[in-house]
Length: 146
Image (cartoon, rainbow, N blue to C red; front, side, top):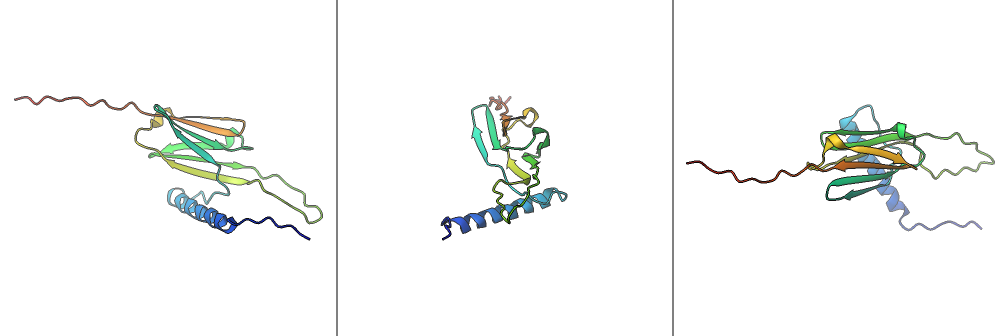
């Protein structure tokens, strides 16, 4: 008797992943013809504080030197690649659950983001990108001369 895990939302999850890949591929094609698509997308948390935005991405197994963080025209791009390990297949059994290959994520930043002072660091497979906010221009009264 074979036990099969029941996943009531499995088909919906698959459709969601395929649509994400389609839209990521379309966005990549429009901006960078040399980049085809993502094989996987890291999980990301986005937090806004009073003085900064914080993007935290789980990218275990990726060397920090292989991660490219790029800011252009209000779009923050994170891309890189997790290397594929060579695996030996024995007795016809093979199971691979961890995603491998290239990843690509893009985020639109608000006008309050200070692109000149973005900082990125990676520790224990977690990429943390700090985006300081610009100081708000204080309103001032302009007197009309007569």
